[in-house]
Length: 125
Image 1 (cartoon, rainbow, N blue to C red):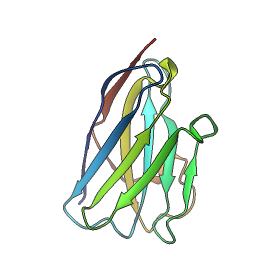
Image 2: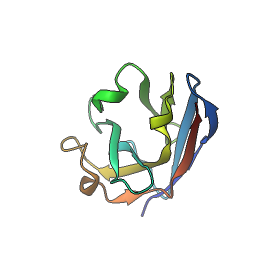
Image 3: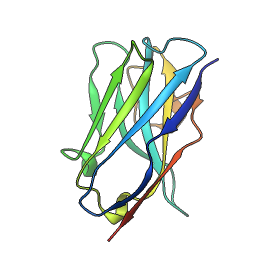
Image 4: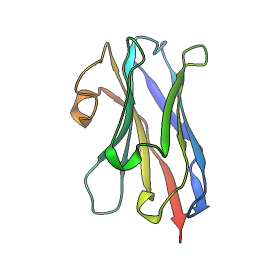
């Protein structure tokens, strides 16, 4: 079993930055594909970014490219999401997700077995 705990959310002004963290416990996630998703009120869960388990390839939703950066630190068993130039439409609960040996279909929520509880990001205009 893998437990995921997100942190780093909060209130930020438009144009500001935040770094989200997702700490994994229960086992090492170095052989897991990892992703970030978000969900705003009354909207479906939306893909943000992902990093493949092998090779470290990264993937982003189009609206996040150039503003968000996903990274992982296997020594700390932690996934990160650096967000910059935040916009009011980025406000949502952000979730991290993990799936062992996951390299493909990283943008689909159903690809992931493990999920965190989420961290709220609020962006004021």
